[in-house]
Amino acid sequence: MSNSAIWHPFTQMKTAPPPLKVKRGEGVMLELEDGRQILDCISSWWVTIHGHSHPVLAEALYQQAKQLEQVIFAGFTHEPAEKLATGLLKHLPKSLTRVFFSDNGSTAIEVALKMAYQYWFNQGEKQRTRFISFEGGYHGDTVGAMSVGSSSPWWQTFKTLMFATDIVPFPATFDEDSNVATHEAQALDCLAELLQKNSHSYAGIFIEPLVQGAAGMRLCRPQFLQELAKLARTYGVLLIYDEVMTGFGRTGELFACLKSSTCPDILCLSKGLSGGCLPLSVTVATEEIYQAFYSDDIDRAFFHSHSYTGNPLACATGNASLELLTQNPDVFRGMEALHRRYMETWLSGHPKIERTRICGTIAALDLKAESESYLNATGSKLRSRFLELGFLLRPLGNTIYLMPPYCITPTQLESIYEVIRRVVDE
Image 1 (cartoon, rainbow, N blue to C red):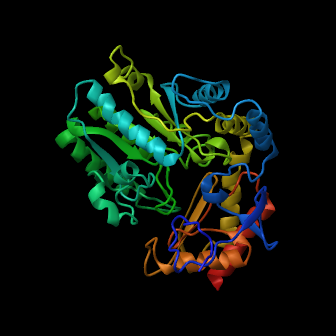
Image 2: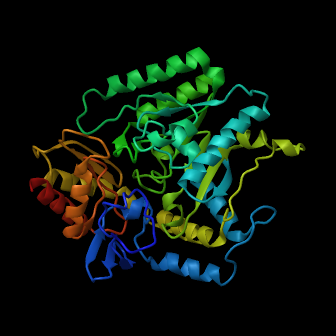
Image 3: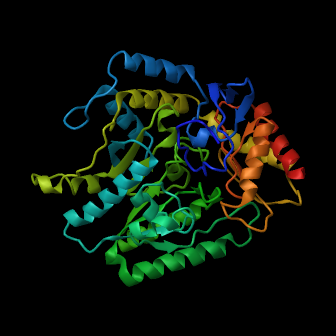
């Protein structure tokens, strides 16, 4: 049992091994207190897109800390937030025009929920109180975010706290999937049936575009998102993209909405937004949604905030991170080809592996197992073995995935595939 007073996340504290104490990080490497070196294959829960201790981000943080570390964001503003909002909008679909700051992925989703709900309320459509989301979707661990991700396996304890959401199938696909079109049609038919019966009761549809993260890096095709967007427009329901994970280059383009040639009504961003330095998120909305709140009537205002909304330090690192991404987009656009090369070299045709899939900087595969549950023992055993060999990989049940920092070298990336092959053979 650990002597630490810290209660760690997603951890059964009684049975978990003692946490590893990290002394420093540089690039893709973490140095433990005992001197061991660990290659961070998952960008520390998908946030450190440029790698650890990046000098440009560190300098931006240092310079901002000397000038302004924090200020209340109600009634005040500052240059780092204004610059970041403007910079983001330059790279997003033109119909997205308004940026609301908050703290993390879950709060970005909570903002989107309340924003969508009140948008209809302000227009007199008070019956629009329900949301649609996709089987396997994960949108965060606060109560509203859990509710729209209610098919995830961790929240049975909290079911009575959560509001009801209508769940439709997610057409998960993988390399050489011959049934993808059929599964997409079934999902769209299910969604269309819900909308035909009761479209005027729905406020919005939530989806993780192109990649469902916590469900096991399950992919869908751009074509599916395009048909989904058509249905949402046809029935007048808001389309809400959770790009907390897929944003900032993860799918091989700056945003999944750009890669899929679609445009949501509301877009949630976090994780890589600050380059992994500080908690920061935004919820971006169309002008039409913003105008529904813009009024002489105070009751129509959007009453939501957090203590650190628009934090100057986080915004400063966000600006530096966005500049790094736009100066050298090849670092994330070129990674998919490397994933495919090494997947083919080291893992193709392996009898224990199925459903390989790659999207931009993300690669995943499933180990053949009796149980595919996130909570089965396979994931924890794999995680321990990978750490013994010097690699931070955190399998989702029987799914092994890679989501490395963009600064990883080809040699380092190939070494991850080599160790996966070794452990799978074992």
